Amino acid sequence: MAATIFVSSAALAQQPATVRIGYIPILGAAPIFVAEKEGFGKAAGLDFKFTTFESGPNMIQALASGTLDVYVGGVLPLGVARSKGIDVKVITATAVEEMTVAAGPTLAPFFAPGVSKADAFKAFRAKVGRPAKLATQPAGSVPHTTLTHWLEVVTKTDKADFQVIQMGIDATQQALLAGAVDGATIREPTVAIVQTRDPRIQLVALGGEMFTDQPGTVVAVSGAFAAKNPQAVQAIADGIVKAIDLMKKDPKRVAPHISAALGKGIVSDDIIVKALGSPATKFIADPRVITQATKLMQTYQVSIGTLDKDVPLDGLFDPSYYLKSIAK
Image (cartoon, helix red, strand yellow):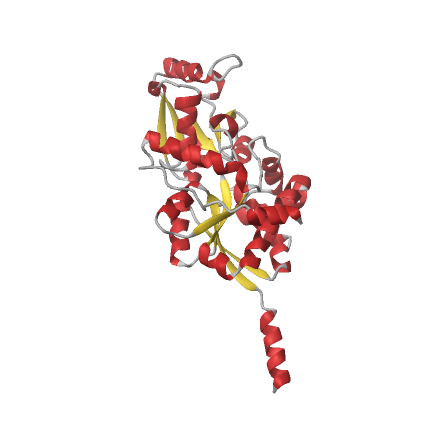
């Protein structure tokens, strides 16, 4: 009987631990898929189960309800979540300065060398007879915040020269390609996709210009999951660090992992390789890089009225897992 109990216990111990991961389908989420496909999670006894979300706030609700263990998405909703009593911690970043401003065929020619961005928009309105239509995501999102900051603070563009139109990520891509808008905030791999389909679409601003150290995608875990599974959390951080290193060294190897996860067979490996080498792609695992920028962006959101007040970020970032990963 003792032997039977021992065998059963051993078999049970070998069962992989399920980790429920929510993610936004953008290139910034790619490291978690590379970690899964390269077997970094499996080697640590983890079984990743993925669920797609269209926005961070929706994913926060799932995290709060206990149906998710890990959040892979934009950092800004997490601060708001903590202010509402939701216990969540950022263990790594994945990417920074992801957003870009793309100008379609109607707008791009006005961004000539030596012409200021504000003057380009002014010239467009003078010639076309209307403000430039720019698509972005809803107010409060990182895309909307960075676009507003770029237009009003960085370029000081006259408000009469542009019109911001809010829509979803997929709708933004479609509107830009269809010419329904003159420009848009997009990130990889959308940049590579739209420029391949229409080479007349040009990037007129990269993320660093829009907002320095622009905080982007992060990996966060629920407090309950971290308390019960500290080794699993460390393994996830280890996997992200390894994945980002591999993505930088061998993009062709990881491209099939990413296209399968994000492109669902529609986006080719070549597009993913192009996106990985894009000037709009900056993978960084160190969460300390975005701590100050997250505070500054939150303060800016308060100034433009998309956030009621600064929410405390104390305790949101926990770099200890990242530091242990790089120490290895």
